[in-house]
Image 1 (cartoon, rainbow, N blue to C red):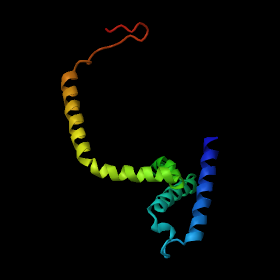
Image 2 (image 1 turned 120 degrees about the vertical axis):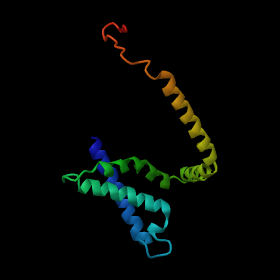
Image 3 (image 1 turned 90 degrees about the vertical axis):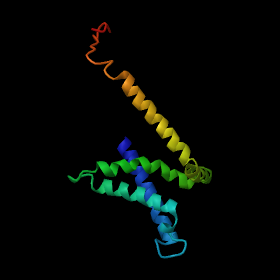
Image 4 (image 1 turned 180 degrees about the horizontal axis):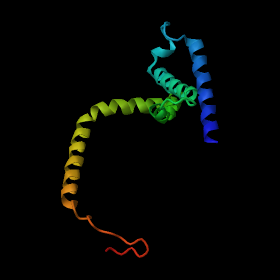
Length: 136
């Protein structure tokens, strides 16, 4: 069921991509398909999906290609203008929040090191009986 749904959406997005390429041109025109960054993202997602579908019967390891399936929900961003504006604003805000993320990272690092020092060895050689839950 999920594989059939995956194939359906892949065919749907492939047909959408082909229609856009026919309408806009691929690369050479001024407003061509690959001149828009969102279309480049769509092209990458669809082409990796097609490549994994074509190579699924071969002995090539496709675990790296399958990780691009996570990006498929991003394809819907290009169809919803409000969501597209929200994602662009989020990307611009990440640049401005960089220093805050660095400070937060160091706090997490300090508390992780402190936690390792405080709890190191506490849970060593502790056995719990499954039936009773008693610690031996």
